[in-house]
Amino acid sequence: MDLYRTLPDIKGTEWRALRLQDGEALADLEVACKSIDGETALRDGAAWQREIGELENAKRDSVVAMGKNGRVAAVGHISYSDRAEEVHAFLEGRIHPGIRGKGVGIRLLAWLEHQAVKRLDEVANGRSRILRILFFDRGPDAIALFEEAGYRFQYAEDEMTFSLKQKLPEQFMLSGLMAEDWSPSNAAGFYEAYSGAFQTRTDQLLSRTAWTSHFADPTDEEFRRDFSLLMRYEEDEQVGFVVCHVDDPDGRDGWGTQIGGVPEWRRRGVGSALLVQVAKRMKTAGFKKMKLSVNQDNVAARKAYEAFGFVLAKRFTLYRKKLEE
Image (cartoon, rainbow, N blue to C red):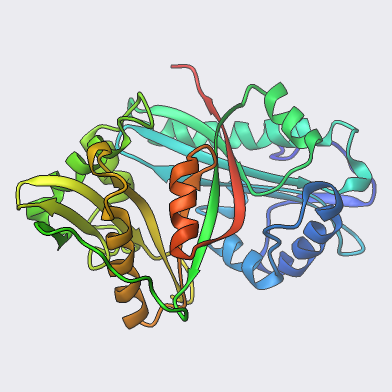
């Protein structure tokens, strides 16, 4: 069967898999889309090349409608996340404004779903299969398309940054509090702190296996145990935590991937003390920025990060569809 036969014919283009040399043409497509979709997170040609190079299997997981003039009419690709209790496929696509409203988007999304489901079926081994669409900006036409295809809003988060060139706030820490680096011996304490901190934010806490797999897997090369801290009170009470990662290809930015304090210890300087210590370590290690994300509806946390010195960089939104068992 022709891999691309279900995709629509677009005059003057040919459907094929992405190639590294497509980077500049894809950057041009994003520029063409910015008047409708926004321009918060436009990628240049080099960033697109990195993204294509990181695909698990470009022939299976990507498609582009490339014009004879070297311009892109439409593009889609898939990446995967293998977790303890779920397997996820992240779908991304763009359609040139000049051909929107002609059914290209819904057929491209259907193609991406078909390819993703085949791969998820191969690796799920009894785990739930999840399709996700994550984006920084999209026009109302794209949102309507996602919802028509059965995707539902999951959350929106603000990405915030703190320049490590600026002066750090004064660190204040109550007597009896102490911060420990992540280690196998206190890994359970990190999960206990997560459970206490996020019980007021969600009614679906992750299991310890799932949380560790996603946030604090010691075999993950992006997980930074030397930046990840557990805050205890008098050695036996977990009151807060931060787990950190590095995913910038040039190693210039560090992430405070998840940070939290248990409810009875909030507004007592635990979060600020953790951030100061992490920022000091990242600065010493040569990082330029510290980043974190906060749910858009978590007003108190957002204000605390702004008071610390973090500024809004961009907002990303996630839509989700769980496949039937």
